[in-house]
Amino acid sequence: MKVKLIILIAIGLFSCKANHNKDKMAIIETVLIAKGNLHGSGSEGFTKQNMVIDNQSDWESLMAQINSVNNVSDHFTETKINFSEYNVIAVFDDVKGSGGHKINLDVIKTNKQVLVTVDFVGPSGMATTVMTQPYYIAKILKTDLPILFK
Image (cartoon, rainbow, N blue to C red):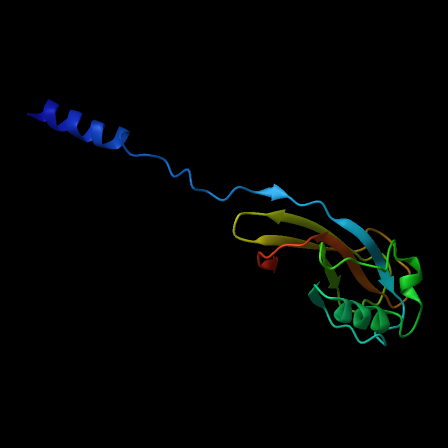
């Protein structure tokens, strides 16, 4: 009787299927538009924030705001974005009291969402004592999936 019960339990355990419906993840290639630091001591008016820009009007507003103190967009790799093909991701950190701060991004796509992992990196070693505000702006292929920041 015990042997039959053990065999029945073993058959039940081995007949369970593994969950193969896990989200497939793929790294999304980003095209860097600009990354660096704003030097207006916060006068540009950006708070620490993550933005997804999907239209020309919002893009022009961002460029006007980022250029309000210095002509930062002069150093962008591109300023004309085809919003029928691309979304723009813009990340701004808090204003910092020293240099050496930067932002890095990793973008991963699943079948349910696009996940942007933001890495705020502080200075290693000595840093200048100048007010800076790190930013990172990149474009990705247009998607209808929700874009989440982590």
